[in-house]
Image 1: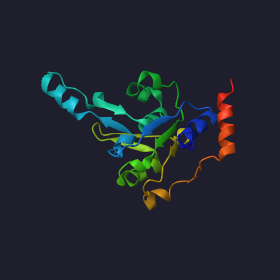
Image 2 (image 1 turned 45 degrees about the vertical axis):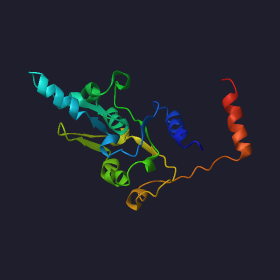
Image 3 (image 1 turned 180 degrees about the vertical axis):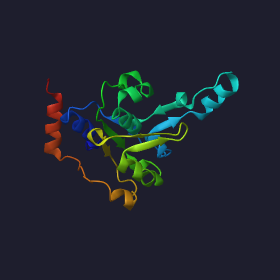
Image 4 (image 1 turned 45 degrees about the horizontal axis):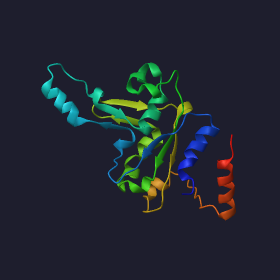
Length: 182
């Protein structure tokens, strides 16, 4: 490719932030999938076969943008929601890559306009909201292969930058730099 995906890693490196959190868009992706996934089937199963009540929170797995928002908050409030390798000692800013958003259904970009603008999300199953504060607001980078046109309301809220495929000389320079030992 042209390096669109590598842009997020480069931004994180330049800003001395952790490795980007990645969401790979699919044709079945929904707006909620950017933030979390809920395993309703496992929850239902456990509720049927266990005597004690089982909290819905146990069946929620946070995804890239949800993790970034949780990491922007006080860890005393959110640490138990994150996997151990993503827990943090203090609020932290993250870079989030939503890769190939044009693969997602056409409604997905419009369905997350408010959430992206406000950097918040709501977990319906627990009736809990999380909102990232300005100093730790995640940096969101989305890539597209221009396979389909994205909705105008969504595009009006984006800064667009086209990365052209490198010419022969530039490609040679990139390969040479990659092959040099550190």
